[in-house]
Length: 115
Image (cartoon, rainbow, N blue to C red; front, side, top):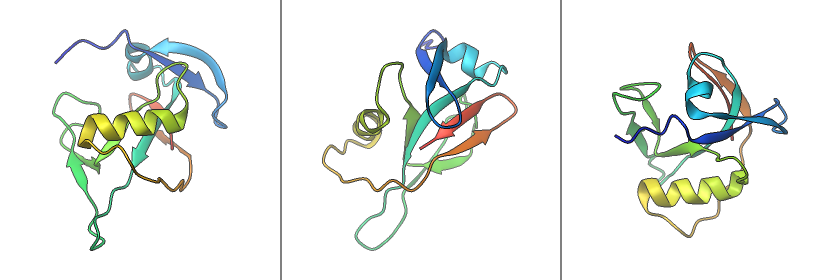
């Protein structure tokens, strides 16, 4: 795995307004800086829901999660991050997402504004 602790994320308020920036390491290091992420719920033609098991080295190791999920980079729009993550993680390029909601997720190590 590459060391991406220096990757830059936007720090946001609970409405999604950018109020600063911080590294991945700062966002995941226990300081609980609120940063935006995207998740895409993927269903097939029969209505089956795709999930993925988180890597052992991650924030929520070994837990089941959406098939597509990732961070919004500093300066990137939420919709662009979703398109990028969908291609990077499962190779889809043409899809029409439906926005469900945004909410704050908090764990022992981090806070995320999930879209």
